[in-house]
Length: 336
Image 1 (cartoon, rainbow, N blue to C red):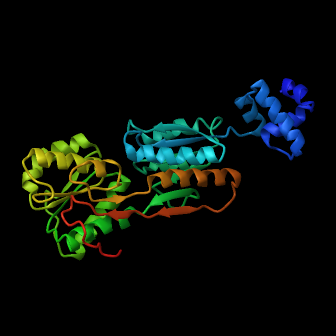
Image 2: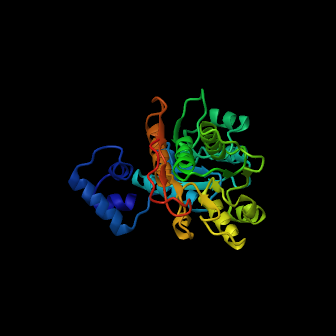
């Protein structure tokens, strides 16, 4: 900084004001300092700057997993918004299934992070306690905690699954729907399963003992289940709770000698790229994954800037996308 000050013929404090944007500097002085910084290749010490400003300009993003396009799109949206707002992003996952331990580790990084955006797979009592006691600002993605002041960005999972189910039973005239979800305790699975049950109740349709299955949102386990059950499901439609499992079931049905959708219809959820790559192309529900990450980071930065403001919740709405795999492309879906 002393070298920059000498070259620009300004005081050390003026260089500091330019670097940290803490006060107005006239345009001519600003131009000289920025030119000196560029000429000397000066890089501010991030840790020293963070100590002085009492912020690191680093945000955390904790997700249940980092595998697959669903999470990569959330990361892409979060990173894009963080960069636009002048922050860097550190990403972690709870892949080991221990949400509470991962969050505990994250909050121990409070001296490094200005705030954290969090998506957990299960909202357990332990996780709620950790979040309620968080020493740093946080925003929840795709979940909420009643009675605790915080910001959140949620997807209307129920509305998206309702639109899919009504499309199947009303416009595709499906008489039996098989539900294949993630873990039974998973928030998204629970919301989509409740919509599945609700529409069947509305239409007076029953749920058979072999009509609901809980997996792990992965292609391989869905493929294995499909090999075991596809022939028994012939004439029905499988509603998979994500596109990856839907693709696994389509592959298993084809391997079992069934035609999709003629013998077995299959639909998914999320509208990741795999939905357009499989054949037949997948009917699914489009989730605004990029926006989920971007808006969570936007809310987090607002909270950092205004710690005392009222909690905000943003609700994003999914959209039914009708393609070939349901067997009734071209029919208009029922308004929801």
